[in-house]
Image 1 (cartoon, helix red, strand yellow):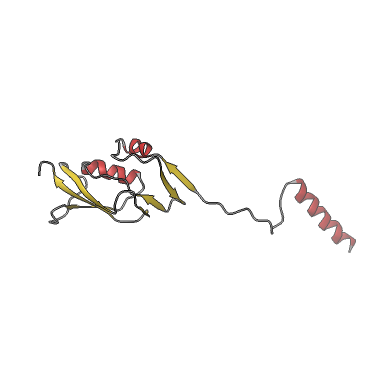
Image 2 (cartoon, one colour):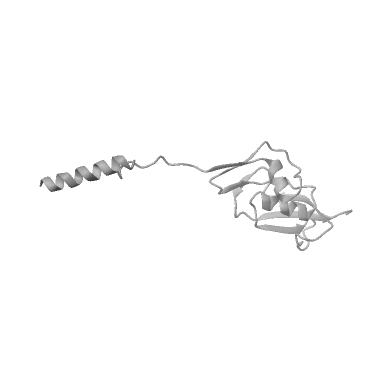
Length: 135
Protein backbone atom coordinates (compact mmCIF):
# COMPACT_ATOMS: atom_id res chain seq x y z
CA UNK A 1 0.00 0.00 0.00
CA UNK A 2 2.82 2.42 0.78
CA UNK A 3 4.29 1.89 -2.71
CA UNK A 4 0.97 3.01 -4.19
CA UNK A 5 0.95 6.15 -2.07
CA UNK A 6 4.55 6.81 -3.08
CA UNK A 7 3.67 6.44 -6.76
CA UNK A 8 0.69 8.80 -6.47
CA UNK A 9 2.80 11.30 -4.56
CA UNK A 10 5.56 11.08 -7.19
CA UNK A 11 3.06 11.71 -10.01
CA UNK A 12 1.60 14.69 -8.14
CA UNK A 13 5.08 16.15 -7.58
CA UNK A 14 6.00 15.69 -11.26
CA UNK A 15 2.73 17.30 -12.35
CA UNK A 16 3.40 20.28 -10.08
CA UNK A 17 7.00 20.59 -11.31
CA UNK A 18 6.00 20.60 -14.99
CA UNK A 19 3.00 22.89 -14.56
CA UNK A 20 0.33 20.46 -15.71
CA UNK A 21 -3.19 20.71 -14.41
CA UNK A 22 -5.67 18.01 -13.52
CA UNK A 23 -7.90 16.76 -16.33
CA UNK A 24 -10.94 18.37 -14.70
CA UNK A 25 -9.53 21.88 -15.22
CA UNK A 26 -10.29 22.83 -18.81
CA UNK A 27 -9.43 26.13 -20.46
CA UNK A 28 -12.14 28.74 -20.96
CA UNK A 29 -13.83 28.63 -24.38
CA UNK A 30 -12.58 31.16 -26.91
CA UNK A 31 -14.08 32.88 -29.95
CA UNK A 32 -12.04 33.84 -32.98
CA UNK A 33 -12.74 37.40 -34.09
CA UNK A 34 -11.09 38.80 -37.18
CA UNK A 35 -11.24 42.50 -37.97
CA UNK A 36 -10.24 43.77 -41.39
CA UNK A 37 -10.45 47.37 -42.49
CA UNK A 38 -12.22 48.10 -45.75
CA UNK A 39 -9.05 49.72 -47.07
CA UNK A 40 -7.11 46.53 -46.36
CA UNK A 41 -9.66 44.47 -48.29
CA UNK A 42 -9.32 46.81 -51.26
CA UNK A 43 -5.52 46.83 -50.99
CA UNK A 44 -5.47 43.03 -50.93
CA UNK A 45 -7.44 43.00 -54.18
CA UNK A 46 -5.27 45.70 -55.71
CA UNK A 47 -8.13 48.22 -55.89
CA UNK A 48 -10.00 50.64 -53.67
CA UNK A 49 -13.57 49.58 -52.85
CA UNK A 50 -16.37 52.14 -53.12
CA UNK A 51 -17.41 51.71 -49.50
CA UNK A 52 -15.91 53.20 -46.36
CA UNK A 53 -16.74 50.98 -43.39
CA UNK A 54 -14.56 51.45 -40.34
CA UNK A 55 -14.15 47.68 -40.15
CA UNK A 56 -15.47 44.43 -41.52
CA UNK A 57 -15.92 42.00 -38.65
CA UNK A 58 -16.36 38.28 -39.01
CA UNK A 59 -17.02 36.02 -36.05
CA UNK A 60 -15.27 32.67 -36.21
CA UNK A 61 -14.62 33.38 -39.91
CA UNK A 62 -18.07 31.95 -40.73
CA UNK A 63 -20.03 35.10 -41.60
CA UNK A 64 -18.85 37.76 -44.02
CA UNK A 65 -19.96 41.34 -44.60
CA UNK A 66 -21.02 41.96 -48.19
CA UNK A 67 -19.12 44.93 -49.66
CA UNK A 68 -20.81 47.50 -51.90
CA UNK A 69 -19.58 46.98 -55.46
CA UNK A 70 -22.33 48.87 -57.32
CA UNK A 71 -20.74 51.17 -59.88
CA UNK A 72 -17.59 49.06 -60.22
CA UNK A 73 -16.48 47.19 -63.31
CA UNK A 74 -17.20 43.46 -63.06
CA UNK A 75 -13.56 42.44 -62.76
CA UNK A 76 -12.93 44.89 -59.91
CA UNK A 77 -16.16 43.87 -58.17
CA UNK A 78 -15.13 40.23 -58.36
CA UNK A 79 -11.77 41.01 -56.72
CA UNK A 80 -13.42 42.95 -53.90
CA UNK A 81 -15.94 40.16 -53.22
CA UNK A 82 -13.21 37.52 -53.14
CA UNK A 83 -11.02 39.65 -50.88
CA UNK A 84 -14.01 39.92 -48.51
CA UNK A 85 -14.19 36.10 -48.41
CA UNK A 86 -17.18 35.67 -50.73
CA UNK A 87 -16.22 33.28 -53.51
CA UNK A 88 -19.54 32.02 -54.93
CA UNK A 89 -20.16 34.72 -57.52
CA UNK A 90 -22.54 34.89 -60.48
CA UNK A 91 -23.22 37.60 -63.02
CA UNK A 92 -26.44 38.45 -64.83
CA UNK A 93 -27.52 41.16 -67.23
CA UNK A 94 -29.59 43.82 -65.46
CA UNK A 95 -32.21 43.38 -68.19
CA UNK A 96 -32.68 39.79 -67.04
CA UNK A 97 -31.58 38.32 -70.37
CA UNK A 98 -28.74 35.80 -70.10
CA UNK A 99 -25.69 35.66 -67.92
CA UNK A 100 -22.41 37.54 -67.81
CA UNK A 101 -19.04 35.99 -67.32
CA UNK A 102 -17.47 37.90 -64.44
CA UNK A 103 -14.27 38.34 -66.43
CA UNK A 104 -16.09 40.11 -69.28
CA UNK A 105 -14.75 43.59 -69.85
CA UNK A 106 -16.99 46.56 -70.43
CA UNK A 107 -19.64 45.62 -67.85
CA UNK A 108 -20.52 47.65 -64.75
CA UNK A 109 -22.37 46.40 -61.65
CA UNK A 110 -25.72 48.19 -61.27
CA UNK A 111 -27.27 45.99 -58.58
CA UNK A 112 -26.22 43.21 -56.24
CA UNK A 113 -27.80 40.59 -54.00
CA UNK A 114 -27.38 40.18 -51.11
CA UNK A 115 -27.34 43.88 -50.29
CA UNK A 116 -24.15 45.66 -49.25
CA UNK A 117 -23.48 45.60 -45.51
CA UNK A 118 -25.45 42.41 -44.92
CA UNK A 119 -23.71 39.68 -42.88
CA UNK A 120 -23.92 36.35 -44.71
CA UNK A 121 -22.32 32.88 -44.52
CA UNK A 122 -19.13 32.63 -46.59
CA UNK A 123 -20.74 30.12 -48.97
CA UNK A 124 -23.62 32.45 -49.93
CA UNK A 125 -24.18 32.89 -53.69
CA UNK A 126 -23.61 36.56 -54.61
CA UNK A 127 -25.39 37.75 -57.75
CA UNK A 128 -24.00 40.81 -59.55
CA UNK A 129 -26.31 42.45 -62.10
CA UNK A 130 -24.61 44.44 -64.82
CA UNK A 131 -25.02 46.53 -67.87
CA UNK A 132 -22.66 47.28 -70.72
CA UNK A 133 -20.75 50.53 -70.26
CA UNK A 134 -22.62 53.21 -72.20
CA UNK A 135 -26.03 51.46 -72.14
